Image (cartoon, rainbow, N blue to C red; front, side):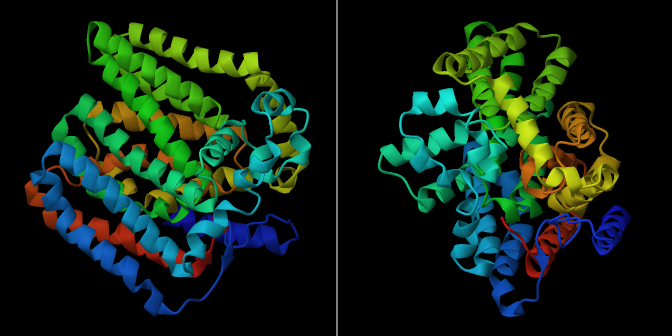
Length: 413
C-alpha cells in the first residue's frame, strides 16, 4: 500500500511541475472518474460467488473440470468488470491505435513482413511497439471470415483464460496438484482482468502455455518430453513475434530445468523457437532489426519525456494493483521452494523489464503475462482446508481492489 501511495503522490507532483506523462491517474494510465455505484453490482455479485464457492470447488472438482471452470469463471469476471462501461467498454480498447487498424494494410503477408521495419513509423502506436505477429493473426482470422472487433475480443479473452489453465498445469507439475488447486480462485479473481480488453491478454495465454509445455517436458521422458519441449519452443517463437519483451519469460523454464537437471528439453525448445524465428526471417522480417526499429520509435515518443526514476517505482506500484494485495501476502508467506521456482523466475523477469527502461508506464497492461505467475504465491494463503475463511477474506480484497480501480479510473484499455 505504501508503494502505491508513494507512486501516486510522486506522479501527481511530476505532472504538476509540467511533465506530460499521458498518465493522469498515477501510477495507472487513464483518468480519474466518478461512477454510478449501481453499475458495479454485476462484478460485485460475480466476485461474491467466486470468493464464496471458489475455495471449495477448487478442492472437490475433478482436475480437468476445474481447469474448464477456472477459465470460464475468469472470462466472466473480466466481462463483468469491462461491462461497467457497456459493451463498448470491452470492444473500444481494441480499436483505437490497436493492431486491428493495421489489418487492412497487410495486403500480401510476405510483402508486409519484408517492409514492416521500414514502414514502422507509419503504423499506429501498438503496431510500432511490437513485432508483426498479432497483426498477422488478426489478418488470418479476417481472411477466414472471422474479422472484426468481436473476433478480436474473443481472441484476447481466450488468451487470458488460457493463461489461467497453463499456470495451473505448470504449478501442478512442479509443486503438486494441491498447490494448483489452492491458487485457482486467486488466478480467477485477479484484478488484472480489468485490462483483458487488450492484445496483451492474448500474449499472456500464448506465453504461459509456452512456459508450461517446456516445464512439462522437464518432468517427462523420451519422446513425450521432446514433444512437449518442441511444442513449447514453437510457442516461444510465436511469443517472440507477439512481443519483444516477453522473450525474457524463457527464464522461467530455464530455472525449472536447472533445478531438475534436465537440459535436453531446453535444447529441443530452443530448436522449436528458432524454427519460428527463421521462418519469419525467410519471409523478410528480422526480429533483431524490428527490435532496434521499435526502440527508435519508443524513444522518439512519450518515453523520452517520462522520467526513468519515477517509473522505476511507478511500474511496480501499477503492477501491485494488477496482482492485488493477496500476492504481497502470499510472497511474504511463501516457503515452498518448488513454487518459488516459478514465482522467483518471473520476479527476476519483472526486475529486468523494470530496469530496462523500456516499460515506462502502462505496465498494468504490458505486464499482464507476468500476473498469473506471481499470483501463484497465494498458495501459501490457501494451502489447507483450515484456511478457507482466510482465503475468502483475501479473495474479497482482490475483488475490492479491482472494483475500486474500475470505478475510479477510466483506462484506455
